[in-house]
Image (tube, rainbow, N blue to C red; front, side, top):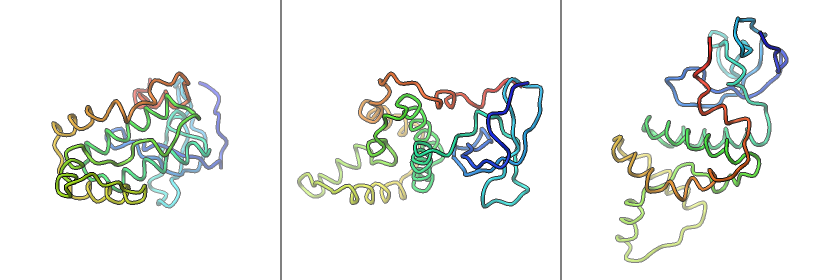
Length: 193
């Protein structure tokens, strides 16, 4: 049994405890420490805005402190959850953001992190329709990206192709040498019991 790092009553972020769902981040409050025969401390948490029946026991490695870095991480994940309807794409994009955040640590440029974006085919078809390349402002890009995904279809083959084509540009942060606490998030549901 190990010592609990967080205090009862502390408000922090908690990842979705159900591993079959996307790794969404919620604001949570620690209700009590749970003592289990595990190397990882457990907590009973209440998710803010939810009924008490959804209170859960979660391991410590699903909890994140309420810092600016983690608030931006939550904001990016929430953007994907709101705008990408396809479950497979949504999980892939959230995993990408978590991986980038784990590698980049506090040196991350949140404006360059992929949230929602168009595939190359959609960008090319838009260019061919207009006859020339059009430069969009940042706000126009995010609006057009959101609209493009609302009507998109979902197939695993096209998802893999789109992500592979964009990996070099979208995941440039993976080469940064700074490890971060979020490194554990890449496999945080494989916990010893």
